[in-house]
Structure formats: C-alpha cells, structure tokens
Amino acid sequence: MDLSVEKRRRLQDLIEEAKEILGGCVHADGRPKTFAELEDECTEVGDLFTAELLLNRVIQRDPAALSTACPHCDRPGEHLPDEPRLLQTDRGEVGWTEVAYYCRDCRRSFFPSLGRTRFGNRGHR
Image 1 (cartoon, rainbow, N blue to C red):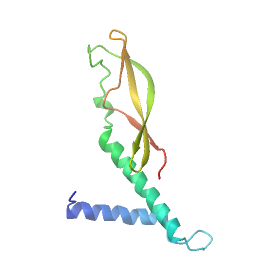
Image 2 (image 1 turned 120 degrees about the vertical axis):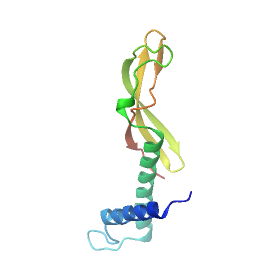
Image 3 (image 1 turned 90 degrees about the horizontal axis):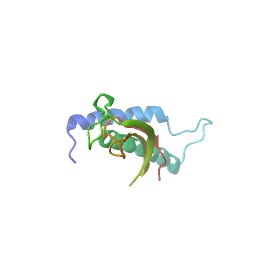
Image 4 (image 1 turned 180 degrees about the vertical axis):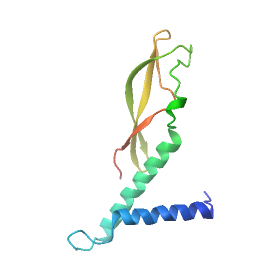
C-alpha cells in the first residue's frame, strides 16, 4: 500500500498524540520502563488501532441506512436481541454486536448489513 505524503503526515500526527497519551519512558514512581514494557505498550496501541480501523472499514455504521425489511420477502422484521460476534484476526480477537431480526413469514433470522456497533477489542497477542 502506498500512502500519500499527506496521509503519512496525518498518521505521524496521530503517533505524536499517542506518545503524549502514553507518556514517557518512565513509570510513575520514577523507574525507567524496560524495552519489553515499552514494546508491550506499543503493541497494545497498535492492536487497538488495527481492530478499530478494521471494524470501521468492514462493519459500516450508518443507522439511517439500516433496513429492517426481510431480504427475502421485503416485509418488516421483528427485532431480536443483538448477536455478539467474534472474529479472529492476525492481531487477535475483535468483537462487535450485530443487529438481528426475524421474519415470521419466511421463518428466518436476518442480519442487516448496516447499523452494527462494536463492543471492542477482546484482547491481543
């Protein structure tokens, strides 16, 4: 992937903000953080960033575009409890909740492709 100069600059700004959020290379008690501790912090940030980017790109979140009509008969569906979903990625598990509906006429559950919401990263390696 080739990022434009502008995108690289904007991402560099995000990196600077992440460094500010994480703080320096010293614990609150004044002890220096080990390289392994710094690496763990960076890995956690990277995994969270990756999970959020992936979810936002794969799972569109536009509630206005959510259709509650059955994809088979086009009749209105009955809202069911949202379904938790879990996806195993190269960087760990990513989870979200998926809106679920049931069509009494077709006797089928369906999951509209828009309007889903995440429940967060379920961990990292």
